Image 1 (cartoon, rainbow, N blue to C red):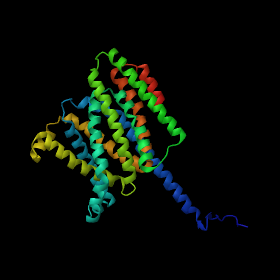
Image 2: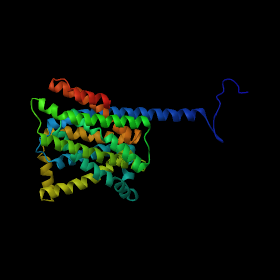
Image 3: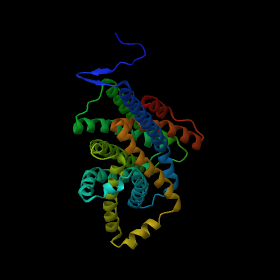
Image 4: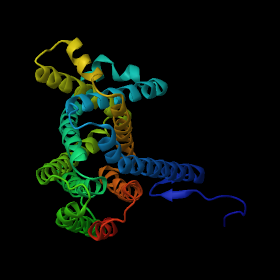
Length: 325
């Protein structure tokens, strides 16, 4: 008989855990999930506003590589104080660890650099809701790549949601032409086609990189991986910018960065913040959950576009939003 007032230990096989240990584990898991959901919400807000900020403040003639280079600089600047406060900056640059970190970050960083370039083209070629809806195909590519690279299968409900997402993307593409023809300022057909191809390519690259990051984040922290990827991306983008400008000097590259209009700093800052949030969501919730968090950007994009244009969303886009959400 157990005396009243005493708390029994929890048996797990041959071992026994005290109730306070079990409660602490549950509390830690719960707080981690709450933190993950908070990052997902912030990512949805950033993702919904990003295409409008990019199309508003970024002139079409702006050098795309310069924009992506600026984003990586900002992400590195974000990461340094966080690593310093956590005491991880010194460990990151330790000789035995530094090159391992760069090695883990090299492939996903290269993929994300190309993805960002494609995203810049798409954001300037498509309206906000079309951009956001088509970008949801990254959910399919992420789930597929997580299965192929990590061996993690999706449940039947998740597969059903992904199929609904594909249907919404196809519906949106079929209705885009009629939407553009009825608009007051028709969109150039070739420009729209280039935007659609760019965003689909970016979505596929995002799925591959997300699966690689989910694997590598287990070997190093989320912020460490983000910082390492920024360093690798800076090297690659600096080389690309030097080749494009036909001058490898640092002065020439700084002149190109300085030539960017001041307003472009707004989408650069917000997109860099989104990159930090992606790392945190991947760390706390996983790569596929990161993709689903971005779906919330559809709602934000729809509301913002309706408010800015003072119009009602076309029926095809409205149906696509309902299918995705």
